[in-house]
Image (tube, rainbow, N blue to C red):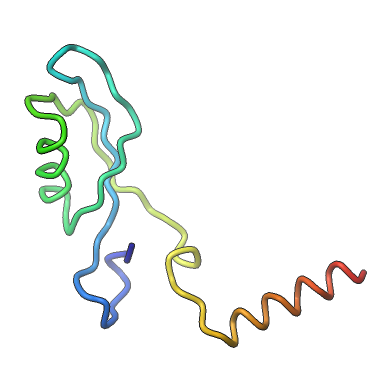
Length: 89
């Protein structure tokens, strides 16, 4: 999953949107995370999954970019050596 602020050669950037909905049977479902190019795209995907639902709340989910960005081999080696040093202490 790419964040909208990340510009790379991997294609279109996507964000995650959080929703609280009421299904057509009346159940409230909270914490639905749907990826999308924008909120309208995420809502479209949501309504494909939950037809005739009522959106009660929606919000953009900000994630830590360090978890989203792939690590290169130097970053992996650095992480491993740092963990080895911490365990030796």
